[in-house]
Amino acid sequence: MTLQQQLAAGVAALGLGLPDGAEAKLLAYLALLDKWNRVYNLTAVRDAERMVSHHLLDSLVAAPFFQGGRHKPPSVLDVGSGGGLPGIPLTIARPELHVTLIDSIAKKTAFLMQAKAELGLVNLQVVTARVEDFHPETPFDVITSRAFSDLKAFVTQTRHLLEPGGRWLAMKGLMPHEEIASLPDWVKVSANHALQVPGLDASRHLIVLEPVV
Image (cartoon, rainbow, N blue to C red; front, side, top):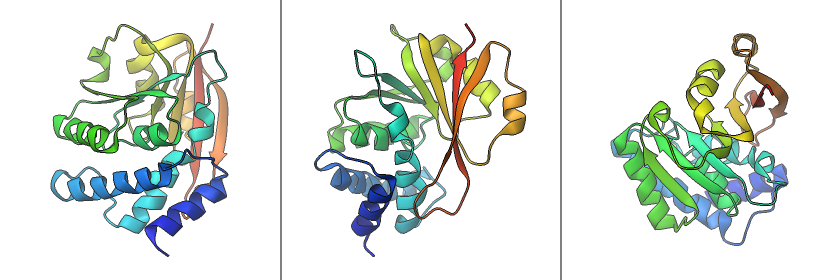
């Protein structure tokens, strides 16, 4: 099975409706990630076939939860984005989103800027900073992370960046019971979703957190 066939089958299994040209753009991103990874060590996954399931599909599985339902498309902050996961696949799959990628490591954000330029991702912003030092003019509707830190650190370090009425979407492997138990009392888990990633035989969960009002 080619990478294109693998991706198409995975997208179909997830029931995602992607914009025209999105699958080609996702594969172009994967090729760019693979190329830069040889020098900059952006991801531990080296095999391109595994990258489809472990990176692309593992990010896209969360795309339905980023639907707005508001009057304006939601703004999304991807914290500790690294090689652009899940932010870049989300940007390609949901071009109506306004996505900001933040990472403190300059070589990673250099890659993210290159990906933005080569893939023509006009709705994508890249920031080189520690998240606790980031103070944009406008806070975000959704803050997400795929591998940033434990839940307590995630919400504590990004609390100042969340729009009132916003939420955190934390992508996790096994259900993080201990992390949930240690959350501060000003945040609550409003939902948790067990996710099935095509081609990935591993537990995945999306934890939805909101401030206690």
